[in-house]
Image (cartoon, rainbow, N blue to C red; front, side, top):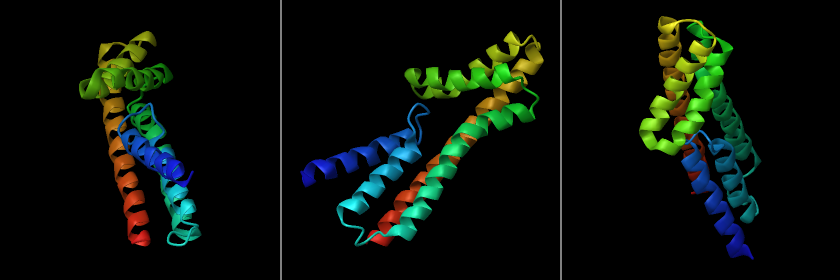
Length: 158
């Protein structure tokens, strides 16, 4: 049974790492769950409460950043709520088209959302670029925080 639990912990960590770059997966939360499970399987002998709480805070910050970055950048450019929703939907759809989809999806979604709100092509272009930049910066922050989570766990563990 212990082997199965270690496999589950490793799978959570692996899927969590993948989720750091794939917007459809809650990467930081899955990564935290896997790291917590690994510590639990060792009876918290090496990684205790304080590091796990800190790693959990990093996971929460990474998750919030992921959700808010694209919306905040789009709103700062004066984008409509339709544009923000379009950028988010575009990011989810873009996952199915690989790296190019991850870049173009939010842009196309924000542009279409802004056009839906009848704001005109110049405003749609600004919203598209802002949403894409926000999502990319959010993803970079999420990856950096995910790497920090794993690094902290490994440093404390070994």
